[in-house]
Image (cartoon, rainbow, N blue to C red):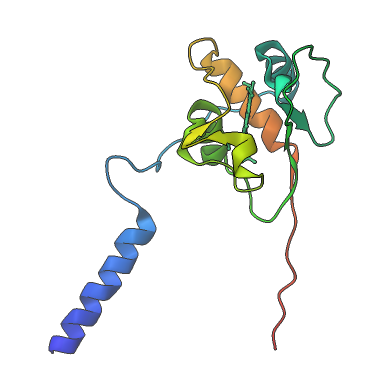
Length: 146
Ligand code: HEC
């Protein structure tokens, strides 16, 4: 009986962790449909090309380009959800991308990406997310069964 109870408790723990329920969970976030072409315009207008290239995207002309350019889009091994994209746009320091040499993209715990939250409209954010999402390609890793 005791083992059954502790198994149940363990299973419940796993189930709760998997659902990530709680007031700070991202569950329930749904963006309206964004527009890819307007997203590319917003990308240019807001000055994102100062630090970014986009795989398979247009060439951007930007005078004050950063020394280190972070490429967005291209092949990834997991789907870039819009939850992740929105977070990296409005809260860059939440999780620093691990695909680059740390000292090039962060200053301690802070991302070198500056905040756009005062100047970016919600419509721009939605369109930017649609634009960037369209530039990622999911690469399915082959699974080897020994
Ligand atoms: C001053 C330079 C700079 C500007 C301007 C900038 N970024 Fe960034 N961005 C970075 C750096 C550095 C990183 C990598 C570190 C990190 O994850 O925050 C990054 C990361 C990102 C990521 C996550 C990439 C990944 O591989 O996980 C996205 C998405 C992104 N930026 C979008 C944007 C958008 C959209 C704009 C314009 C509104 C913008 N950035 C403007 C420097 C910049």
